[in-house]
Length: 387
Image: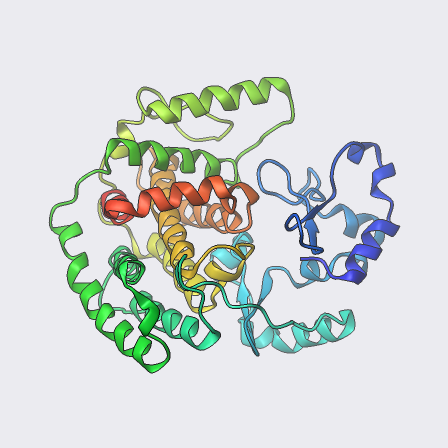
């Protein structure tokens, strides 16, 4: 999100006079009645100012201090809550996705100085709804995220099991009549639901079954949205490209035959081959996924990034769906060979881009997520594609 100083600076740079930007929107409003803005993105989810050499045009033309404060902070990001703000890593950056570079602790002083110079103090945020039907104050919402964090950080289980536990917690809570459960009573309810979530999730792994037909179609539609965010995707703006995308959407909806190459340097594969088990994955392959999903929950990033109308439960449903997408794309990237750490890092970069990609935060995708959450299809997807 851009502050007033960022907006004034971007407008003073007069990018609309640049031939490469004529007729293009540089700034996008966050909502119809929202006065806040962000920088526009290309179809592949990359900032409109990223040049062909993957460098920032603003930086190249006007220098580092001319960039918006969020760009100067990157890949660090603030996640403001009620009276505190978490600092987290955005993993669209390959070094961040690989957990390289200096630790967050060593960068805090620089971040504070940057915020001081930019005048950008993190403002308190409104609490997201707990479920669609239950808006709650910060203490109740925080109690839910504490329960979810305990499940996701539980090292006794592999990541896919922990995500399934989180899904079951969300499903159980979504079914509860919460009117009488507030404060300490909600905390006690969540403690009981955590135990039930762990016990109930075991069934998905005793006998792994593929998602139902309609769920599979909705899932592949989501995969198609994410593939355009993969760092190896090379898109173009043309009618030919639009036609190619329409044909790809038809093929992904049908889910049979060869997978469209879709401007990605992946081996030829079929939709049927994507249902094969991956087998045990090396620790180096699992680690980027583990770090990404744990950080997303503990830092509240999954619930607070650009989804002001989504409830906590819906946001976690969507986060778990992205795990299944990641496993599907990992299969595609390593068709005919064993996946390696670089494959995993590039998939995590794609997933991170999806968290702030407008089509994956809109109403249409929200309906997809809700539909997949019914009848436990999200847990079935996770268990199936983690094989």
